[in-house]
Image 1: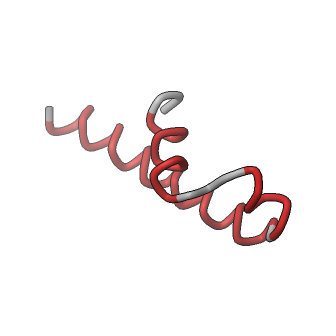
Image 2 (image 1 turned 45 degrees about the horizontal axis):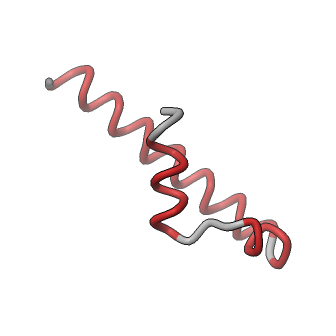
Image 3 (image 1 turned 180 degrees about the vertical axis):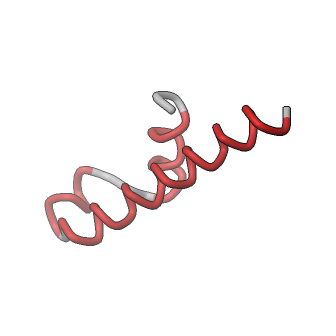
Length: 48
């Protein structure tokens, strides 16, 4: 999770600039990255 979330955020353009300009959009995108990372980890634990 510690490695996946920052990589997803970087790929999706979740930046400190976005955080400063539009906090709600930053939160939404950060939550989406976290949810996606959790899905990846769960998939790897269950199926691999």
